[in-house]
Length: 285
Image (cartoon, rainbow, N blue to C red):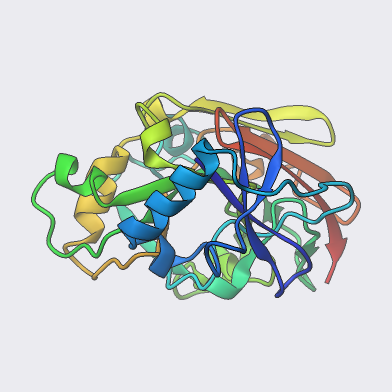
C-alpha cells in the first residue's frame, strides 16, 4: 500500500494512493498514519480490505497539499557515510561500524514544502536518502532478517545538511542537521510488502534541473537490515520511528571548488524508484 497524509500543515488526514493513481480517503477508518496504526495489524487489515473492496471514497487531489506520510514521529535516527561512493568523494575511510546521529522530528516537512536556508549559512547541501519506518518494537535484534521483519515501510527522505555548521563549528554533527525544515519526507509511506529488495532501489536528485545524485542502495556499506539490527543494540526502536539510511555520491560537499551549495531560489527534486518524488524550493529563513 501507498499511505500518505494530505491537507494543511498540522491538520493532515490519512489517505491511500490506489493502483490506478486515485487518492482515497482513510479518515473514516483510521485517525492517522502513525506508529500506533502501523503496529496495529487489525487496523492495517481493515485498510487493505476496504481498498480491495473499493469502499474508500475518492479525494480530489487538485490543489491538495501532501504532508509527511507519517505523523507523531518518535525519533529520526540517521546513518552517515553509508555509501561507498559517498565516502570516497568526501575523502573519508569507509566506517567500520555505522555512523549514527539523530535528527529531531520537528525537522520533518512535506515532500513539496519550502525548505529554509538558515541565517548565516554558506554551505547548505542536499542528500537523497532511503527512509525506513519501524512497525514493531525492536530491541537487541539478532539478525538482519529479523530486523527487516520489524520494518513497516519505506519512504523518500531529504537529509538537508549545513556543512559548516556540521563540520567546522565544533562538537557533533547536530547543529548542521537539525535546522528548521531540514527533513522533507514522503510523498508516500510504501508498505514493506511492496519492496521486494531494499538493496535494489535507485536514488536520484536534481538541482535546478541538473542531475547531481544518481545512485543505488546496492552501494550501501551497511544494508538496511544490518542498519536496523545495529541501531537496536544501542536504543529501542518503536513503531513510528524513522531511520535515514545515508546518501550516495553527488552532494555539493564532494564537488570541486567552487562547491555549488544551495541558495534561496534553488529548486531541488529527488526520487527513489517506487517510493515517489519530491520537489522543494529553497528560501531564506
